[in-house]
Structure formats: C-alpha cells, structure tokens
Image: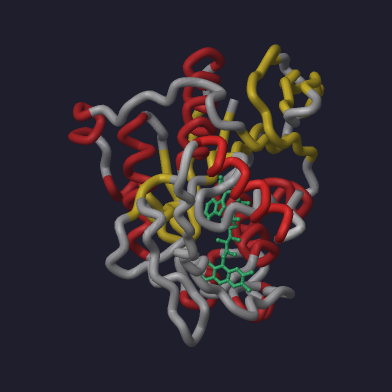
Length: 262
Ligand SMILES: Cc1cc2nc3c(=O)[nH]c(=O)nc-3n(C[C@H](O)[C@H](O)[C@H](O)COP(=O)(O)OP(=O)(O)OC[C@H]3O[C@@H](n4cnc5c(N)ncnc54)[C@H](O)[C@@H]3O)c2cc1C
C-alpha cells in the first residue's frame, strides 16, 4: 500500500506575532514543530505499511525551513519527502493550499491512500483534507479514529463526530483525516537520523506541477482574503466581593441580574 501523509509545520507556541500591516503570521524566528494531529496520521500510515508493505511518503507546503518537519517524519520512519516551496505559493488561503497540495501529491506519485491530520493548531480550519480530496477527485472521510479492516479494494474506518460514531467503507484511492489520540505516535529514532539521506526530500516549485498557471496558487489563487487578524484583547476587568460567603453570593446574584445575565 502506497501512502502519502500531509504534514504542516506550525508555531510551537501560542505566543505568535502577527504583522500589523499585512495581517500575516510572522513565522521567521518563531519556534516551530510538527502539527500535533499530523503525528497521528503519520503513525497510522507507518502501522499500515508495517502490516501490509508498501511505502509512506510525506508532503508539506511551506518556506524552505519546513524541510525539517519532513526530515523529522523520516526519522520516525517515513520513506521519502517532498517540500513544496515557491514564492508564488505565498499567501495561499485554504482553497489555494489544498490545490497546491493536490498538485504536489500528483507530482509525487500514485497513492492508494492519503492521510492528513484532522486539523492544524494554527489555521485550525479542518478543511484542507476534504478540499484536497475534491481536487484529486477521490473519496474522503474525516475525523477517523480507527481503521477496522483493510482489503485489496479499500478500507473500513471508524469516524467520530462526537455526537455520532459510525463505520464508513472507502475504496482506494481515498483520503482520510485522522483524529487526535487515534494511536500513540512513535518517537523519532536516533539510528534513523544517522541513516536518513536529506537528499530524499525532493524540493518542488510551480515549475514541477502539471498546472503551471500561477493565478491558481498563492494569493492570486485565493478566493478569500483576511480583513484583519489580531490577538484577543486581554480583559483585566475585575471586581472583588467581600463579606461572608452568603453575602458574596447575594452580591454576585445582584450583579448578574443587573447585567441581565440571569
Ligand atoms: C487569505 C488568506 C491568506 C493566507 N495567507 C497565508 C500566508 O501568507 N502564510 C501562511 O502561512 N498562511 C496563510 N494563510 C493560512 C493558510 O491558508 C492555512 O494555513 C492553510 O490553508 C492550511 O489551513 P489550516 O491550517 O486551517 O489546515 P487544516 O485544514 O486545519 O489542516 C488539516 C490537515 O491538512 C494538512 N495540511 C494543512 N496545511 C498543510 C501544509 N501547508 N502542508 C502540508 N499539509 C497541510 C495537514 O495534514 C493538516 O493536519 C492564509 C489564509 C487566508 C484565508
């Protein structure tokens, strides 16, 4: 089974800076890590390969330093990587990101299965997997917590939508987005770190894609625009109630009633 895992490099801390003029996240110099959800997708792929054979490749779109996240995945056991990096990809919204990843997946090879995390911890839209599948013209299932059965033709997966948990049968090729806690991701191996050849990460630009129309990528391929991005304002309003517990409770009830909250 040939599997492709999409992995995004995200800020390692919630203390991120936003360019006040462009509204874009300032990624330079920020601590980064592999999107936590993608660890579960990668582990699912590695377990499938270990059981059924084949290979696991990893794909990311990002700045040149996003190569590190692919190498980390290879230290965990992935075979080959592809970094999609090109100034013409910059400023991509979800549609343009998904389209770029679908072009990258096609350029990288034929896959029975594509795995994504359920969502990221920065963009957090949980839309990329489904949109990528639409661009590739393949079926998809989101919020997958488990693979129940694998056959030559496809797989049965368990999907968890919180209010509803159900079984979905998928035919290859297909795309799944993987929920957190679907498994326990393995740690990167020091031995693999010594063995992995960084040249196994292929660097790809728009010139490597089948569709080289630059208006389909980056800012110009993005139908949405961000009007304003700002960190939530701190609300330091506070009031100290004093007296006995009963007196404080009465004051609190009166305050809430005054604000029409109860
Ligand atoms: C108008 C607009 C402009 C933007 N401009 C910028 C910009 O200049 N720079 C910028 O960094 N962001 C920009 N963004 C944010 C960017 O669009 C999102 O980061 C991107 O679409 C991924 O969405 P998400 O993080 O919500 O992914 P989700 O849908 O939450 O992710 C689901 C899964 O998809 C896969 N995935 C998602 N993104 C990637 C990726 N890049 N590579 C590999 N796999 C991935 C992962 O498996 C992930 O777990 C912009 C957004 C908008 C709306």
